[in-house]
Structure formats: structure tokens, C-alpha cells
Amino acid sequence: MKGKFRRRLAWVAFGAAAVIAGCQTVQTTRGGTVGVTRQQQMSPLVSRAQVDAAAKQQYVAVLKESSQKGQLNRDPAQIERVRRIAQRLIPQTAVFREDALAWQWEVNVITSDQVNAWCMPGGKIAVYTGLIDRLKVTDDELAAVIGHEIAHALREHARERMSRAAPVSLGAEILGAVYGQGAADLGNLFGQAFFVLPNSRENEQEADRIGVELAARAGYDPRSAVTLWNKMAQLSGNGPPQWLSTHPSHETRVRDLQDYSQRVQPLYEKARR
Image (cartoon, helix red, strand yellow):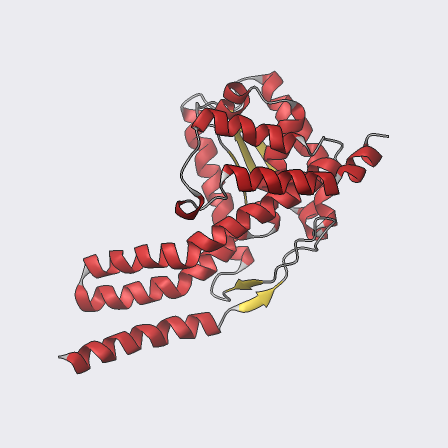
């Protein structure tokens, strides 16, 4: 019995190791003034084209659902404001990767109480009215949000997470075939905690730093990222401790944003001349 168990675990380890070994080291962006230069591991099984295609399909589905509910781009002044800010940020992406200028960028506003915004791979942006209305964001603060979300797309963080999950998914499939669905669920839970959780903190930090540079280069005050996250903290409370969250703690995030917004302040002052 023990021998069979060892052989099963060996197959799981072999399968996971095979996928991990197949990952390629890439540099998705240049470092910029903020110096984000961490090399990333991407699986050849998860190509950028595949991720972009999946993102586009999902974006279309989200817009369709929002439109059917009467929630898509309801306020002309609001959508004009969001798109105007995004259009000042998008040209700055060339500092980090020139190919981003050729992305099929889309910017839409969804009416919802959610305090949320995101940028899917390939430049598919959505901003929720809850973020605008409940936080009463200034243009500078809104630029900080959109810049942060664009940064995730530039760094291909979604693809990176998918690549990290690939060996976990393989191991879970093997365990599930041997022991049933319960073991597969356990494997997924382990993989989420072990592979995704630590990296998500790192991804958020990278997006914060690139985001303030994009904002500064576009002529938006990078220090507004600090006021934005202070508003977020007031709205949501103190939140979970850092070691239980995929995001940095509020105090850690604010310190980092204060540091990096000062580093890019000369870029802001130059853009404002």
C-alpha cells in the first residue's frame, strides 16, 4: 500500500516538475524610472496570444451583460472623463513596452456599486462607477487607478499566474484521478496558497510602481496614489493582516507609494511644463 502511494506521489511530482522545467524566463517590460526589472517565468503552454484572445472574449461577454442590464456607459460625461484620462496614460506605456501602443485598447464604464477597475491583457479597461462615486476620486486619483491596472497588463501578470498554476493543475488532475474530487480540490487550494499568494503581493507592488510612473509621465500627480489608497482604507477598514492577504498591507503599500511617487516627481513636473 505504501509503495503504491509513493509511486502516485512520484507521478504527481514528475508531472509538476515537467511543466515547471518547461517555463521560460522572460522580461515583459523595460524597467522605467521605477526600476521594475524582475524576470518572470512563463509557461510555453500559456502563450500571450492565447491569453489575449481569452481576455478579448471575456471582455466582450462582460460588456454584453452590462449592456443588457443597462449598466454600460450610462453617463456621457463620466465616460468622457475616464477615456480622456486613459488616453493620456496609454501613450506612456511605450516607456515600458513599445508593442503596447499597437494594442486594441478599449475603455468603458460600468454602473455598479463595486469599488473596482481592471485592465485585461491587451488593453481592455473597465472602470466601475462605485470607485468614482463612493471614493469621490479626483482626476489624479483616477489616473493612479487606471495606471495601476494598465501596469498589470503590461507586466502580463494574468499570464504569469496562469503559468504558475499550470503544474498545480496537472498535479491536481493526477490526484483527482487517483483519489477523487476531494483530493483535487485540496491540490487546487494548496497550489493557490503556495504558488499564487506570494507572487500576487509582488505583482501588486510592481503595478503600484509602474502605475505612478505612467501617471507622472501623463501629467498627473503621482502622490495622488497615496491619497487614493488612504480613501480605500477608510472605506474598507483596516483589512486583513498582510500575511493573510494577496495584497500588501495598507501601511506597506502607502510607504512604497510615497517612496516611488517621489522618485517620479521630476517626470510629473516636466510633463506639467
